Length: 192
Image (cartoon, rainbow, N blue to C red; front, side, top):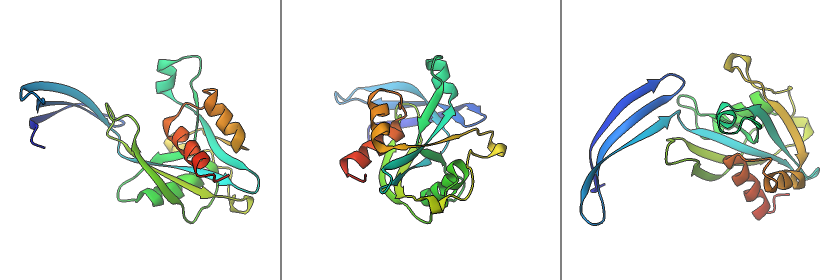
């Protein structure tokens, strides 16, 4: 990129994820160069999936505590979301979502269709989300889900009618961006 030079990364934290301050020179359209500074939070990329059942007209979502929501809005710290997780090591987004589906909601899926890729907060997060959909049925249930104790997860499984999920989104009970994108994808493409 011609309008960017002298990039410096200053590590501010490397705990659960990496927080950098990045100083750089940026050339504006008027030709002027300015020294800017931004912080970026890097926790890797992730994958998410909307599990849907055409016959029952239902979707599977999760509910779990989210500290950033608590920090921003202490009255409502539980988040209703699609099943999702961080991409580990050399795993592909598909391998990740197959694993996360089993761990979080207890369903064994063999495959899924990637339908979207998005940065959910590109002003601060480096995370790219790979978004999937797949059909499920009751025969695919192999355990209770709930997440992994080793990852300190406590995830509640929610199987609800798709129409109710849409109402919850419209009523702002569902406020998670990846979940909204996948519910709207299902609505636009008439998956249910």
